[in-house]
Image (cartoon, rainbow, N blue to C red):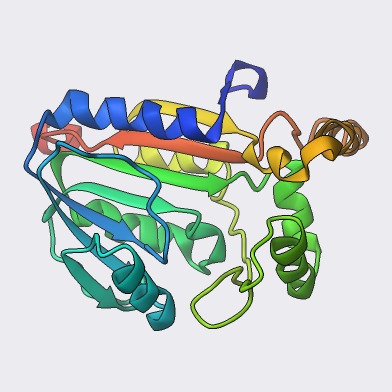
Amino acid sequence: MSDKSLSILSSADVDQHLTRIVRRHFGDGPVRILDAGCGRMWTWNLDGIQRHLTGVDVDADALRIRVQERGDLDEAIVGDLVTVPLPAAAYDIVHSAFVLEHVRGAEGVLNRMVEALRPGGLMVLKIPDGRSVYGFMARCTPHRLHVLYKRKICRKPLAGTPGHGPYPVVYDAIISAPGILAWARTRELELLTVVGENGHLRLFGRLAPAVDIGLRGVAVLSFGHLTARHANLAFALRKPARLASDRD
């Protein structure tokens, strides 16, 4: 997939797009959902869909805040996605948003998430693209600048305090469109959608056009290695009801 063929949506439109896919596959439910690395945030609106939502996160403070402030989890589990026990074929949807870039050994976590997904279930992933200018800058700048960015640009004064990101980034090689798509093929997952978004630009207000120009300039200087068309990616992948390897 080339960068130019990728559809670019707003952050809100990405969630609506993914919700339509979920409703098309599961109707009004019921569905069992695993929010892997759930933290404090859930941006979807699945009103009207019967669901059982399980959240797993290594940050006990973030999970506590999620339970206290949102109260949307039916089950909350403190655990590292690398090691936490996940029941096999237990969930209709496995969702992970902006978590895998923080994980060393992200491919292993993805494999564990697939095993927890029922045949015919959906895996929904949101990641910052490691091949975007945004991802490149996140990898190459110190964590203290990420905290400052969240506090000053994103206007989140609690950033860096217990239960509140940002968290140190790793960006394994798989954290990119080519990485996820190649991995999905090895697991025989069907790609339903992949879209990009540049929602971080709106945080800069009137400076957004200048920031966009700057990012595109860096992309040009990278001789095509980096992209500024998007910062984040969203995927919906379907686990087949029966694997091709099982049919042979």
